Image (cartoon, rainbow, N blue to C red; front, top):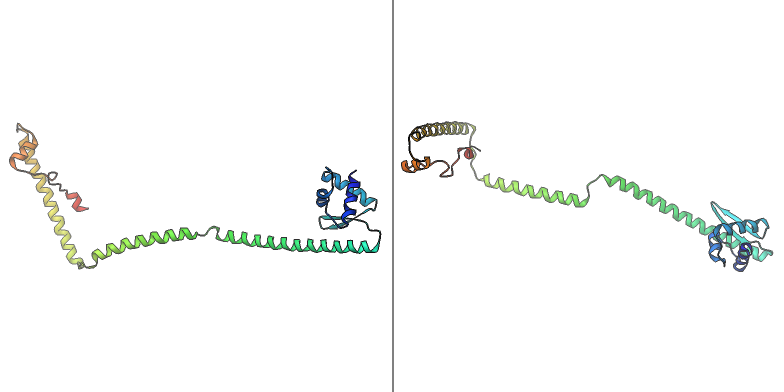
Length: 208
């Protein structure tokens, strides 16, 4: 039954078709396998002609007169031309895809524009902070190494003397506190002594 339907379809349209085209055009619920078997049978009976283009098979009804045969040949040539055009287009697409893939691999490991702009902004910010610090010291007169060495020695000497006197003072106060009936705070207030903590002073902060 499929063979008759396929033959009627090809005779009615009188031009080449692929298996998929015939399956879509034939009336009736025929699967692709049934259509292919019908075509193979019609080709074997020499009622249908089969032409192969690479992996593509084209089918058309076998003509009984020269005029129809010419039309079929022209149709086959047209199909052949379209197949060649499609093949060229597919090749162009494949070549373009290959080229794009190569470009993607080339830039895959490179930094993006957005990342580059972010890094540029961060560097400009850091540079601005450095410039501000430099401007603070631009008007300061530089000190010679000799003067600096002298100042460092004097500073160290005074600092050591301060620590020595503070330690001596605290030893005396602690001796007094051993027999003093009131608190350490009361003693300091009575004598009029202010500690480093009272005036928020720290020698360590100065040394930093």
